Amino acid sequence: MEFVLKHREFAHLREVPALPNALNPHKEESLALVKAMIDQVMALHEGLEWFHIGCDEVYYLGEGEESKQWLQQPDNTPEKLCLAHIKAVASCVASSYPRVTPIVWDDMLRGMSEETLADSGVPQLVQPMIWDYAADLDVEGKVQLIEKYRRCGFSKVWFASAFKGATGVNQSLTLIGHHLKNHLEWLEVASRTPPDVLEGIALTGWQRYDHFSVLCELLPVAIPSLAVCLQALKNGGYSEKVKENVEKLLGMSNLEIDTYMSTSLGTFPGSNILTLVTQVSFYLKSSVDELLKRNRYVTGWFSPYHRKRKIIHPIIMHLFQPDAVSLLSKWNAVVQDLQAAMEQVFHQCAIEEWMEENVHPSLQKLQQVVDDLDEAIKAQN
Image (tube, rainbow, N blue to C red; front, side):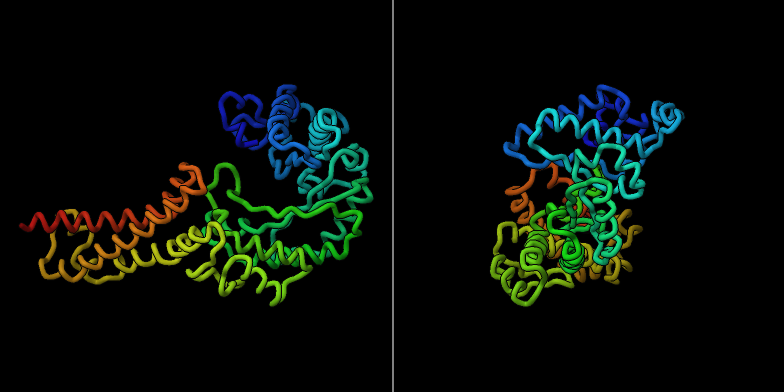
């Protein structure tokens, strides 16, 4: 809801006035807003069988003034407040789209008692999606959780894995091995789940940790991870044969699972972005730091003190100016290629954000040193 509640015109619908994380469930306008959002998505997707209505990590539900008053009434609890809102939203879906089954994230349900869940009427309206993105998830705990949900009246459950994201809020490269292990763990849970209970698995691909965080891995960067995870699910595991199949599909000579990819990376659509992002992630900052922080001619004869006063020894100048200019030229060319490749896929705002986070901090430092060097040389003449 952050996407909507961040706007001033909807701020009055926040559960806590200062925070855009959760919706006030007591206002009729809140439900009308959710219904309008559902209708907009439905209009773009004909023939849907399921619709995910969200409801994860609603940490501030019950913290608003109206909720606090509601909770003071006998028998009212935060759990019942959450379930009542889920029921209201799910009922909206059922009323307007009777052939569509609502899905909800399950984390707000996990700690609730079986009696509370069963008495709420929610199990007859929604299917819970159990999420866990760890490489070593608790298989036994998941099996027990599924059994609990069945006893409460949920007829079906979903799993949610991750093929990218979930490993670092500003992660730029995808470690395939982590996500593969996550899917292999889910396969183990699935093997211990009655076939008529498991509806499916959603492979999530995070773009941000939340609406306000920076971008994590771009989709083209994670295509190999997605391919590996899908093939592992399709084949019931991962083997050398599966690896070879993925390599063939992606046009890759050697698929790295437990390390970040090398810079010779495939022929699949978007592979050029992966190649260039890998170069930037591995080498841009380190190469600039090598010049600015570990080159003794820069640290000793062109320090911030020298640069501010435009002081440069004529002999020293020739010992690092060519390296600085060459490095800047090299990275400008790489960034230009990356910019062009990204323009084929992303909106300009996404490109600008990624560049500002991952490229500009190092490239601007390098550009500034070259500019300061030019100014110092001019001052000597």
